[in-house]
Length: 160
Image (cartoon, rainbow, N blue to C red):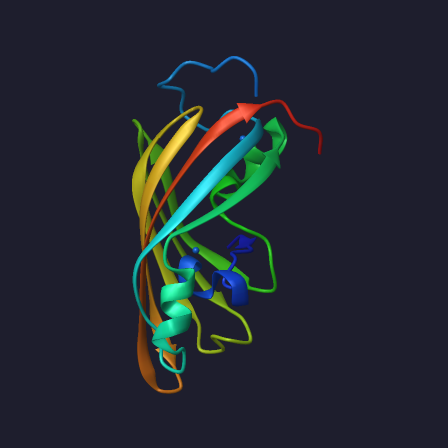
């Protein structure tokens, strides 16, 4: 199994649950290397112990940037979809073919010591993606469910 990192830290607790010049062919079987812009929108969240005012504060758009080289994307294409923080994640399933992607990972961190199953499905081209994600698990013996939508697009070259 491959270990990946997914952001479910304080600033993106609710939003998570989890960027190059000319565009390559739209039906390529993978992501093009380079700089990417990502956006995540939280659609709903039920997180025990997190007040609704906190949920509402983080409801909306979260943005991030990333940079990936060709070798990394060939070895771990899911790296483009994940953020890096204190979460420890284990990839359970990743498939990417014919413009469709599906990705399941199980993540734990200090806020979710029992872990969350983060299940994403969507579509992609070499220079963009759109995903829907449902993160489920338990916190303090109560169910957690976070629903997000995400998208990303390649912006140009970058240096790692």
